Length: 284
Ligand code: C2E
Ligand code: CA
Ligand code: CA
Ligand code: CA
Image (cartoon, rainbow, N blue to C red):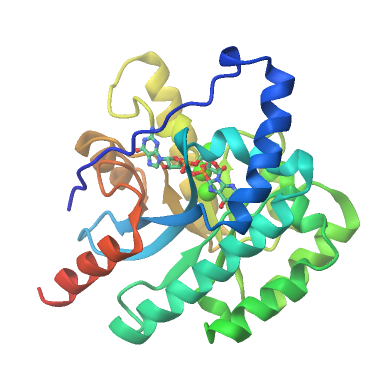
């Protein structure tokens, strides 16, 4: 199932205004965005590379700015982190993901979408109230803990004792932890020994060009294979990210990947559109 309608991001180019000013402005506007419901989530399916069925979703935040249009999270998440607004923003993303996932679970049953995952910033992991926020989001939505996946980057989890305790608390509650953008950090391998990960997401940079058998892609294939073998040995699930064509999907399957995510499989979409896809999937 391919999705139409590429999201038309208006890149917020610092060149348009003085960069520092632009950031301050963005921070102030973000406050208003949170208060005025300018933020919403889209959901990108995580799909079985074997039969094309949707097995999970990643939630991604969108900011529909009244004059700038759709602003990319790559542009406003850093501003949110600098201003501390990432805490209420992250709480919104977490609560909304849990609420929506609980609704899908109620409508389509336990096998339609198995899990839903928001991205969690390092700043949130450092917030002493984070575990309580997660507990509240689960309780208020009624979503079982093992249906929630938190996507964390390597740099976010490499932050010492307190974060490590937080991660083990979340793991003990049954929440799944996914290592996002895997392979791009400096200590991917050693991290796996101490981090209670359930899922590894192979970074898009290893997927780009993996279908061409020229010199560099062969190196990417070696990395992709090594990651899938490592994951198998450690009994972790893997998701290959950023799949943009069938050649990549085929190659990744050969290399041991059963799950994928990418524009070729499905684009991020509003909840209502995914609900329609799930209904179609149920009826086939
Ligand atoms: P990410 O966590 O690695 O998310 C995947 C990004 O890749 C998304 O971009 C998604 O739309 C895009 N993508 C998916 N498939 C393809 C593909 O086949 N080709 C290409 N070129 N791109 C693909 P998006 O939504 O713009 O998000 C960018 C980043 O912003 C995310 O990277 C994540 O780090 C951050 N982000 C997004 N939403 C949130 C959020 O709610 N909270 C936090 N803390 N960060 C978020
Ligand atoms: Ca992610
Ligand atoms: Ca990623
Ligand atoms: Ca990324």
